[in-house]
Length: 190
Image (cartoon, rainbow, N blue to C red; front, top):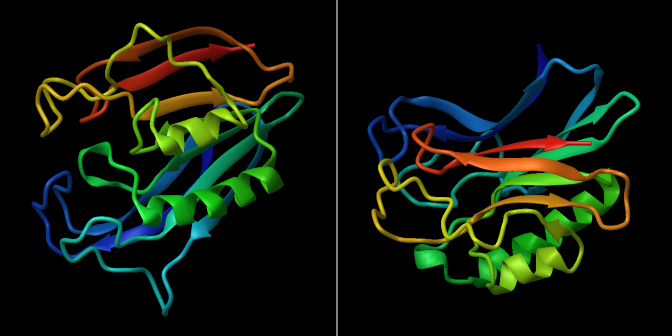
């Protein structure tokens, strides 16, 4: 398979919640279909080199990775800015502007990932002004009840969006548990 990786942060202290090892973490996309891969940062910390985690959330860069599949759609993925209890923060508002600017340039048919912003909230609503939300309404959470630290919290924070008025449609979509602390989104697009 081929792919792309955008480093976002260096974990300097192994064993922190969600991080088992020390090293470079980031966002990646891999696939078997032919096409061109790309990546870009929509919010990058000032300074030289890769930011060091050091125990504070949101200390890393924010990136989007994508693949323009030959004779097919452009699929993009991101991991958006975290906030406590899914509350909208000024940092999220600021970084959403950068994310939207990058997505306008990339023109993805599909945007997916952990948006760290609950469905129905301000950030999610702004995303639905530009994209179609394909997570079924009956889904109440994308947090894995066995693996996520906030056991029992029900929030849809992981999204699978498609661009409106385009050819790409979601044929099927399901969530799979026990893959990560968030449920994996498995979708077939046509």
